[in-house]
Amino acid sequence: MTGPENDPMITWWQGLLLVGAGGALG
Image (cartoon, rainbow, N blue to C red):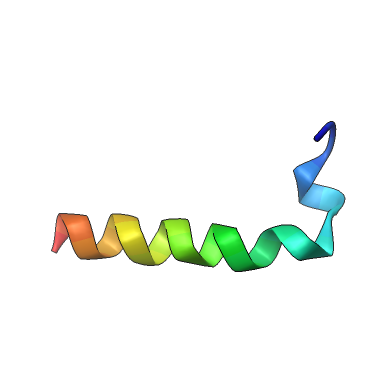
């Protein structure tokens, strides 16, 4: 994992992180 920003498969877990963080914050 040298450049996750360039990996299209990274978007699915990034979304999970965003949803998880949002749910934890509110």
